[in-house]
Length: 74
Image (cartoon, rainbow, N blue to C red; front, side, top):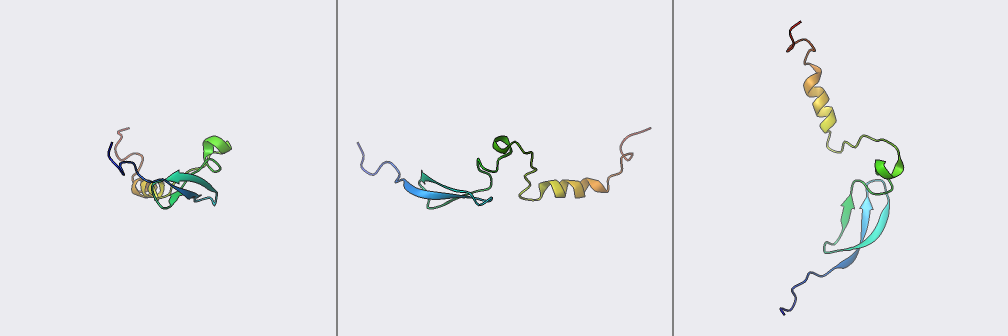
């Protein structure tokens, strides 16, 4: 069997955007996540719109000037 075939796993701290931290093992030096079990709507029971890159705002701006009757005949 070849030597040094498998990657080396380290204990790392996972940091969530909500401030929660927990320890796991990974091949990378650090892990940053946007949603974890403490802030995910499925686990909290609260519905929250997750828009990290402004996609919803861009969509609303793009179609805000579009009139309701512009493409539909009466």
